[in-house]
Image (cartoon, rainbow over all chains, first blue to last red; front, side, top):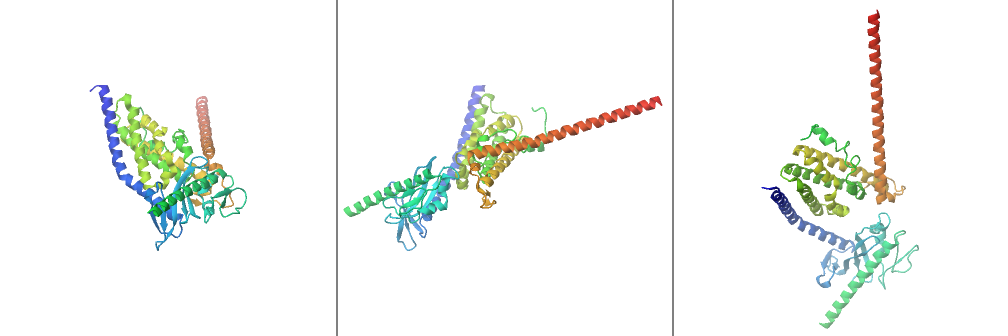
Length: 192
Length: 233
């Protein structure tokens, strides 16, 4: 066997063996990874709706939207994950809303790459807790350096205004989406 | 073949101190600086790298006579990339939290110069036993280095060690320690400390050698004086 053939054969064999091995492992891992992601979302949905126990994914919304219920089956609100741009990159959140979308029931930051110690503080409970029972009418606003006066205002983190404002913007965008979806649904119901 | 064969223990131990990948060879600086924001992250990165080092070492040293010289780097990279992908997939499936924390740095192990360096510089010239020992030694050395670095940054940057609070709330965390700059500062100080220790060791050795030489000279002069005395006597 001359050298060129040998090179080709050796690389081919290594490539095929490696590909086969990876395909096998990927087959084993893919369902587990999917399951992990699903469980994480489920946990987050219930986390932003304290007191609720059940959730249904709404399929025809065109985006991820969950309807949340308590033990008795009463609808306690909606939860949706949404993402947008923060100070350094993508910020992904999960937020919970009351059934009429008037109030926020909870917020959790799922993913972010903000500056540690400053922007990354948005994941901490002291910040996400500020959104509890905040009014969405007409939309959420962040204020800087003073205590919030109106029911729709939250205080931004000192030194991390951009990240705080980003979270607020992502929430407002999300609420708008849910609102649009629900009103079109109502129209459809009415047409029937 | 290798001109000199060192003992198996030395083959393993060299990675821990004498040729420590981080502090002595200064290899693999990208993960060293980027992921060591906390002890657990450093440890996980170290273990992942060790796994790849060990298995790519085994495969490459057993294939070393089959792979033609001209395509060896390509072959090594495919082998290394396979093991890195395995680590990445397994971590995503079994340790999702850690995999999220380390993010793109796990796939980036492929380009960690430490691994290709050991493959080309060691495994391709030595047998499997030695490659295993070398891989383990380098892996453990790398892991220890990353964990120390991560531990120091975690204590000063977030007051905790492996998630347990060790410094009181009164201690204001040094945010800079968990920012990239903190990695450079910590690494630089550790390098300095190690060089200082080495220097001390060397000076001590030189002094000892000097004293030994002096004692030797003294003994020699004494004996030659005695010889003279005997002759003259």
